[in-house]
Amino acid sequence: MTDTVDLLNLTVDALKGKTSVMNNIFSPRDWPTWSGSYPLILVQTPSEEKTSLGKSAPEFNVVSTFQITARVQALATPRDGGGELVEARLIELRKQIERALINNYELTKAVQQFPFVRSQMSISDEGEYQIGELVMHIGMEFYQGPEDFYPVERFPINDVSLTIVEPIGTAGPSLDIKLS
Image (cartoon, rainbow, N blue to C red; front, side, top):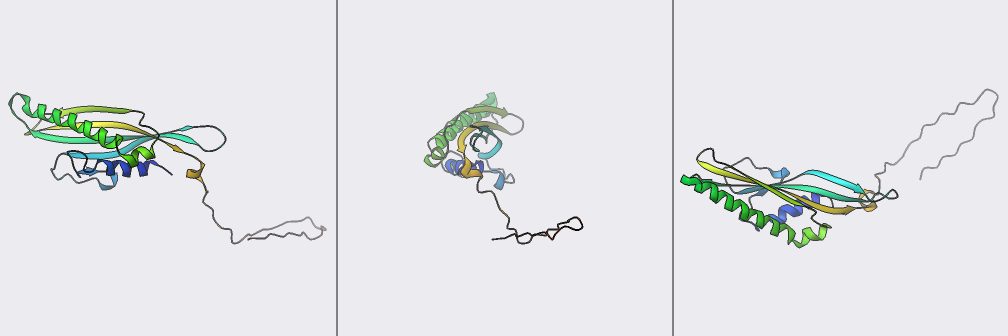
């Protein structure tokens, strides 16, 4: 069984120690209160889409979109030297993230494919430090079938209360209910 939470955990594990960020990687369950330490990576799953494979059984191709946000900083310098350094770090980090995920055996074993990888960079030059942000959206497709939805949770029936109203003059009703 594969689901988005499993893939989120595998993604975080795949990135740890495989990028220049080292272990400064966080998911929604452990968002940090910012301590001033860059670089860092934040991993979350903002969307998931299931496409049915037919009408008979509950079977889906699922594409979860993983948003990976990487942030770096550099001291602002004349002639935008800090901005160039931030951009170079973001480009390298993008390559490291792609390699870490696509080459991770446990992750690639759990997905059918990576149907898309999109990225966008932005750099802020306000303040003493120039801060750069890379936002990557990586699709991870996996299969969910009947085994992911069954068995349906059952609740035992311990008591049954039954009232039978018969018209006057009718012979007494007979009823036998076995709970096993």
